[in-house]
Image (cartoon, rainbow, N blue to C red; front, side, top):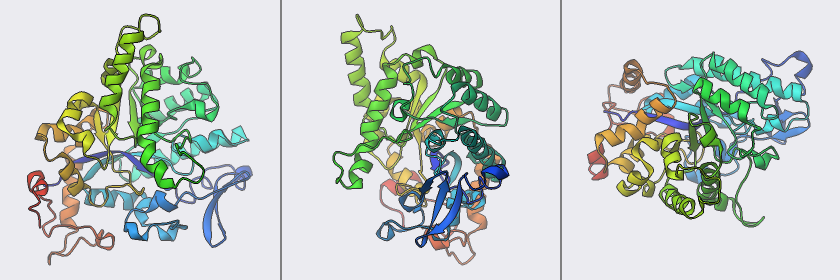
Length: 424
């Protein structure tokens, strides 16, 4: 039987009509729209031109085919930009829940914050949120977790938008992990209090996708981008989590829930150990309060594992806390586990108990995002696999082109056989 997987980090490649369908006529040319230029497709808004494909949308392609391609929507598999196709892709891979982050707006809405025309920016934020809730999530409300962005330039406006969207079903906000990099007031000030009052009031999750502030750790201008991809999870992750744990924000808003995505978890045990050590040495003169950083972490934070084994060792899990670990697929980015999530997760978690596996793969996410996966939704994922498996044992037609290794009867091997290397 398939593992039930709840991914807390996936990305939408926005369809070309997201904003043209929703913005007033006077902003049609100034707002985000797609043009053809230099043999590829670009997003254009105000005086900016942006490409949001490339390595951000290589799901379904072999690594040897990666590069600067794809450059147009027709180069992508439909699941990148089509919600119904994404739902099919996920059901085939046993993914029963998905938290969604934007592409064009930046993970935390940075692009709209940087717009010169704030009336247009406000409309763009609202249009994106309406698209997510009315169109994308509506295509598979049992799978897609409504995740919104906010007007970062105005905390009161942002709080109002959070409440507006919560009334319509929003469960998470993609919020910059360090507003200071955007030249906004830091999270150590009371500037963001209206937003965090709204977080506590609504119970919506503050989901911080590392890199959402535009900070990329790269040693020199000529360092290969692979350096940033390798270093970013630990460098940005450690910086973000220590800044929050030693700051006043979690202490002043003890009911706010933080999720750090795409940061990995292998470094978390060291960070918690080191932070508690520093707290113990300096708490007599520094304004740290009476709660240790690790206590705050276990109370209010969740971190996400993808493509790693060290952070999922029994010792690491004991130090991080089994209730604080989530799983992510990162579809359709280059690190995605799709379409082999079942095998990869089984290998990574095969040494754990069934109860631990259930918590990491889906139960923790259901609790954190208040998004229970119904029995019907779980069954639908398995039934979809069965319905799309041809009688002669070929791969399901819906996923045949993506070279998914589906077993003839639509089931997947159990964890122990995968880890032992006995699957065929």
